[in-house]
Length: 527
Image (cartoon, rainbow, N blue to C red; front, top):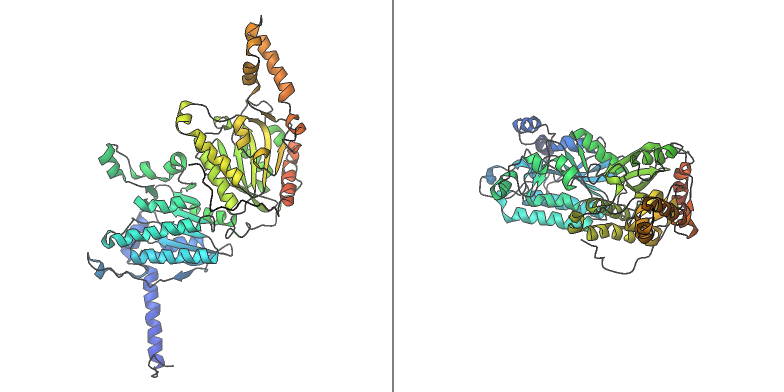
């Protein structure tokens, strides 16, 4: 063996260098100090490497640039140059498929981002895009590293640019396991899914102190940007859990439902649930009376494989359900009205929630199943002034723009513009089915009768009796279950117990669907 100058090197010298290498790598793996680790544990948080071990298959992690250190000088940084520079990056597997990951190490500079730290993240993001594999960020950082000034800020710009470039190309998942403040919060917002852990993770643009100084409002960090706030009120968070272990296990489950990239289909598993399993329970779950509520989740459980599904944004905009599930082992996206919440109407938040979910499914080749029981859009001054027109148009745009297989099922009522927006045949649904309980109309029979027969009702000797007769007449003429089928607006009226089999066979037919879109740089969706 020789050195770079060609002179012989003693084996003992090589062994010494190898021993030195292992010592340095072990130092990098351990982190800054036991005291720092104890402080992390005292907050109820795992270390960066423990989190990676939970996320990835055992023994699969390959680290990138573990010996990277910052080159900044001044402000005391020249004496503090820990390995990794506060972020662990690399790749491994989840259920045997490649996944790229970076994890902030809060024990080093509070996980704050500096130039070297950002460069490592940029590199792993570029690798994920090139390899066509999902990217998971385990966020636990205090924002930009103040000592490095504008170099740190520029590092965030590079992350945002790559988030945008990767959007719709590879799945991007942000897992919030600590604080995320200021501009740093925009990276998770650009990704496909955001997970949070209660009590330990927060996201906000301006912290509680700034809020109090500017507005006089006193609020805690969790009250301002905790997991429950973002899961229920703002809609920033898609999933919230009580502990890191459960959170990371659910990230693994989500990855099992997603493709590696936009050129692949989601993974198919061998189903144990028979294709022709009858859904007899559906006959009792959905009341024929359109005014009676029921739980749409139970309908979904009866239809999908083994009753299993992953609901996205479960606690935000609860009047609509967005979920990933499997039918005959293949992944589908489900959009369904929830009659238990606001009677299943569409409003601003429901429109935004479903539009983003539809776009995600379309980007990653996930067929869409829409289950309709919708009385219309939510009326009200607040909704109109809040922009229900443009927000509702987001959902309409997402459906019209989607090229994946699209199947809709009208369970009960479907009224007005909400019927059209919920993937009706007129906006491009490939197949539309209806149950015998369906009512498709411009509005409910009572409202329609009051408009159409207003004069007759007003002049009648018994207005209430006349109104009841007109409502009955309107229902029999224009709202009977087969009116839409007679005019080709639905492809078939089906027995509810056969819904699962009908959907699976329809999806099998549409598996190789191809849709041509007009040539364009990109659309201009409503904002």
